[in-house]
View 1 (tube, helix red, strand yellow):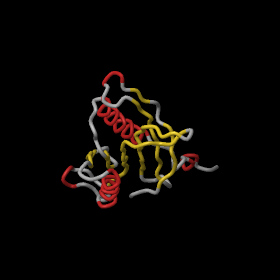
View 2 (view 1 turned 135 degrees about the vertical axis):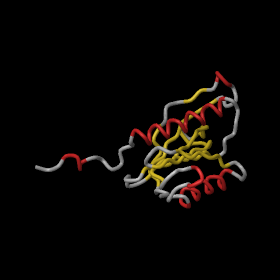
View 3 (view 1 turned 90 degrees about the vertical axis):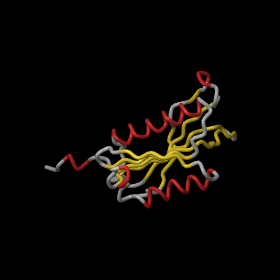
View 4 (view 1 turned 120 degrees about the vertical axis):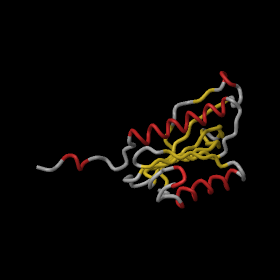
Length: 151
């Protein structure tokens, strides 16, 4: 009889990765509601859920995104200064736009990955009314596709 514990889907999002991505999106949505520009926001965790978070805002959007991606690649073995061991999962988010029905709409784009997955994934969250506090609106996350892992 085959061991059914080996049939776990490799690309299933773990509860830890889901919680980390939700925290990241919550931080980003709250900042947008308040009219803050977080630039590119990065969150990384080790297997023990020790977390590192950083904002990249010093350059243009593309340079900040590249900087966040390079940070993950360069620190895959851990972030000693923050007591984070070898990175197990990460998420990177930024405000951008997606084209839906031939029209661009404001969205937070987030890419995420956890060791053991065959590839990374991305999603987007549509929003409107940045800087309007309680009038700020957003939608549930939607899948956006696959991405190569940075680890």
